[in-house]
Amino acid sequence: MYKKKKIAIVIPCYKVSRLINNVIDDIPSFVDKIYVVDDKCPENSVKCIKSRSRKIIKIFRNKNGGVGAAVKEGYKYSLKDKNHITIRIDGDGQMDLKLIKYFMDPIIEDKGEFLKGNRFINLNIFKKMPFLRVIGNIFFSIIGNLITKNYKIFDFLNGYTSINNKALSRVIKKNLDDDYFFDTILIYQLSRLNIRILDVPMKAKYESEESNLNIITTGISFIFKNLKFLLGFKK
Image (cartoon, rainbow, N blue to C red; front, top):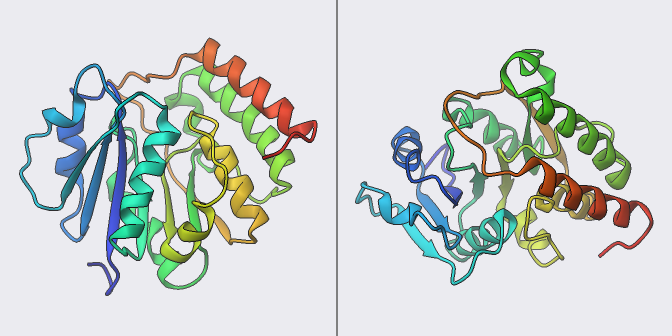
């Protein structure tokens, strides 16, 4: 526990067999539950986890549904176990777990209900993140601002997030995308529910990791779904 709160982490896993053990090893000891969700990974990433900690809950999806589908699966388990705060990270090692307290303290202090990382507050993103991803993140974050009408946040595609149990129990009932558009739609639904959202400043972390995101196909899908929302075809 952390400050008398049960803390859970959800990790969607797809083609992260080389990196997942490093991620698990970096998780602080105060975390109560670790939900690792294998999204029908061809590498069987979750089965590659060496730790035998009882905190680790292994979840195997029958078919590949996308990162959003995997996160939602982990969220449902966290709600069932009645955790107070659920943190979402990815299994590729791109999220610095030394920052984890900044994703918990504002919730505990009732300053926010949903926290998300924002790499654009720190200008080192232009040195660390690949150029095309910087441009893509800026473009889709601006579209996200227009969709949600929330102009106080940015970096909509950042998967380093945390949410309190009450807010999660409300938003999980809404229609949420199964793929990479999940993060934008999650913020859209949270905004409609008047759930308080805060950005957490963080540095970009790109080393030897390789993203599973296909810039071209994902970009086309993003454009289509964003335009659909902007034109009023909302879920």
